[in-house]
Amino acid sequence: MLPAGIAAFFPFYLIVINTFKTMQETARNPVALPSKWILTNYIQVFEETAVLRSFGNTLTITFFSVVLIVLIGAMGAYPVVFNANRITRIAMIYLLAGFMIPFQATLIPLFQLMSDLHLIDKHYGLIILYTSNSVFVFFLMMGYMKTIPRDLSEAATIDGCSVWGIFWRIILPLLKPITITSVIFETMWIWNDFLAPMLFLNSSSKSTLVLQIYKAKGEFAVQWPMFMTLTVITLVPIFIFFLLMQKHIVKGIAAGAVKG
Image 1 (tube, rainbow, N blue to C red):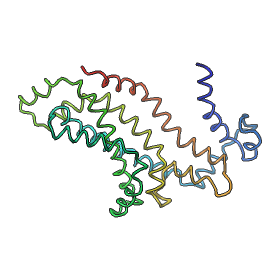
Image 2: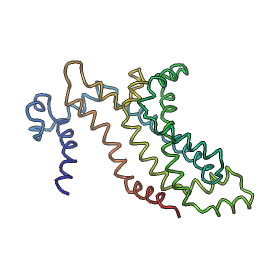
Image 3: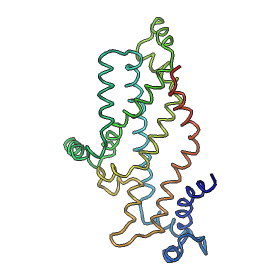
Image 4: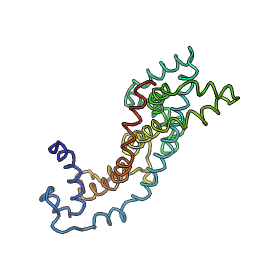
């Protein structure tokens, strides 16, 4: 157990300690602790790169994408579970078939579609693109909704509650565990995603944090201290987020895995 923990921690240790070194010291011995702890790399990153703006871009894209993904996934699962019929079953099969197609296999037609709709190099275009992952949340929500007694929705219907009222006032609040789990998965994916921003965001002013890391790599050389400093700045927020929310991951999935 301890060797596995050390092996998992070592890359993070290697990245962090080299943010406090000069380029020469990093090249000489990347594993050793700094001979003198300096903050020059962090100061240089904030002075020479638009890291704060990129942080804001990443936060905006992640927040709105996750909200839409969770809402669309929950609203899609609701009729499939509580109003199952031939149409909803066909829709579920259709979504499952689309979910099985790798994202990379659709890049060329997807880029053409985004270009035709004038969504290239726009944050809202990338947000719309990310909502395609609502299918993943749809299946998570569907499994969890099956644990909710149908008596609740039937009683609300008898009391005169509308379909939308049942969803917003009864079903959605009961989805809190799986909603938190979905938020964790989607936040970590979108925050760290490189491929979609690389393909669909062209302007430097609209770059995400991951793109800033990529730009630290030169044509013939890599500024390793700056590269690792940007990596730490990118990883720390999502690392803290994961530590705070990790207890909900197993809880949400386990709750939806067994039908009550």
